[in-house]
Image (cartoon, rainbow, N blue to C red; front, side, top):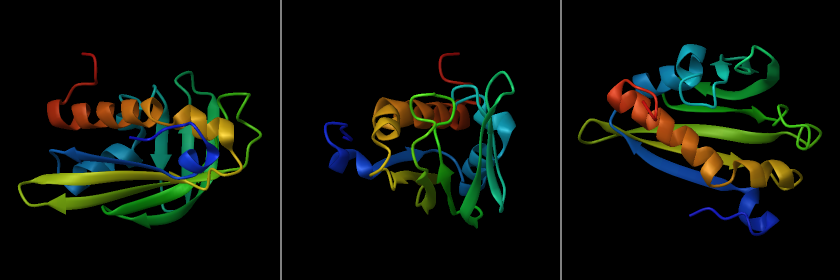
Length: 151
């Protein structure tokens, strides 16, 4: 379990989850805005080899950051800034990495690593635990049932 009791605990956050889906399906869900808006707080997220672009549910600009790794359908890493929240918008960028590993049995291990949070304590606290777990639970539900979480 990830805690937010100290900056050491939140500087690197790791979230593994098993998803009954092929890596290609997970890749589509984490790179295409029509998927992300169904599980990522309504945000339309587009990940390309060059950029990580986020638009809020109302179309507002929630960020445009560099892509560090783009290796379909296995690995994706980009800069992260919580610009939608004024209390975190001025903190330095951190990094989010998505690792997708096919498992025997037709499912995948999806691991999200959010690190480089040492200088961004408010961001670290905001995404810790429930923040990322709601996103990942929503992604898993969408891929496994075809419906967003809560429907």
